[in-house]
Amino acid sequence: MPNTDLQPLSLFQLNCRVQDAIEMEFDEPIWLQAELSSVNVRGPHCYLDFVQKAVNGNTVMATAKGHIWGNKRQLIFSYFERETGRPLSAGMQVMVQVEVRFDPNYGYSLNVIDINPAFTMGEIALRRQEIIRQLTEEGILEMNKELPLPRLLKRIAVISSEGAAGWGDFRNQLLANSYGLAFDVKLFPAIMQGEQVERTIISALNQIALEYDKWDAVVIIRGGGAVADLTGFDTLALAENVAQFPLPIITGIGHERDDTVIDLVSHTRVKTPTAAAGFIIEHQLDELALIDSIRKQLQERTKAALYAEHLKLKQITINLPNVCRTYQMGQVHKIELLTNQIKQSVGQYFQKQNHRLELVRTQIEAANPERLFRLGYSVARINGKAIKDASELAPGDVVTISFSKGNAEATINEIKE
Image 1 (cartoon, helix red, strand yellow):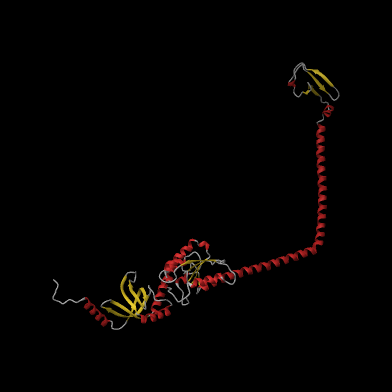
Image 2 (cartoon, rainbow, N blue to C red):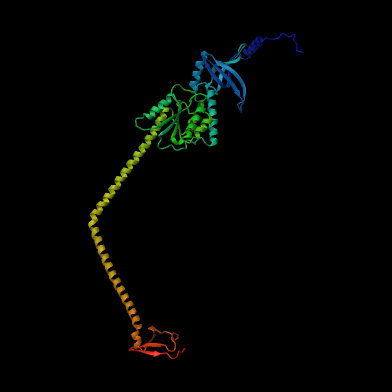
């Protein structure tokens, strides 16, 4: 059974004793390292949530609430942003000097009275180094830089905030250029500061990727006004999307202090949106200058070739009488040779034909029946047909025998083989 004789403490009394203990233990301000999970400005004051996560994960090990009262907020905010180039925002690792307080009504809290920007800058640098290390291990750190920049850089997809001054500056600089260069520009809106930078830029890149054959390059710009939050541009997911995008990406984030991670992985990095427009215009002017140089070279070479041909024609004109005379003599010689060849060929042909005729005449003469008759031969016929074989006759047949001079008839009495 509990001892009910002891006098119990009220909640207020307990909180007061906790307050006394904390004030005794933390009678002076201390420096604290933690991550900001939220930063909310309400009126002149700023209310913070601190967290500590496990080293190898996102498990929250401790939380605490804090605040920056109005008399310190502007001073701390301005100092931090001036030193880091970034406003104080959620997700940052910070080192702050705090007074540990405990109020019986509101509980435990931390009153921020100073901040160490160098610590945050170091943490940001470490995080960026880790992202770069991962991109290097994946083999994609230089992938977008290796894409060839199209020689005709005319169709430009732009990712920016729709109402941003940087978008207006870029568009005016590009479309109203004094050289009369024409460009096809389309905006793919995204949020360019705060926690939605990564998500909205990746979404815009996905939209462009669906029609990437319509564009020559992508420009990501942000500028104008005060320095805004750049931590959204230093994420692994956004860097991976930019590095592996199938079109060259030009960044003009609009800050002078340092590069963001997507600046490091993009094809070309310039300082401002206006500089991005200037880069594209300069690229086109370089190409036009190259084309003009090629045109001049072609003109010079054409003139030189025409002049050389003119000299050749002139020389031919000068030499034409000699050439014609030489040609005429050559042709006469050729005709004489051909005439002699024809005469020789015709003579040989007629000689050959005469020889053939003589042979035919001799053959015809040898086969002449009159010659045979003169040699003592005769021809026996029956019914006008020459008899070649005795088997064609029968006893009693009457045959006609032709001699060199005259004919005779004979009757066949006997057939002998």
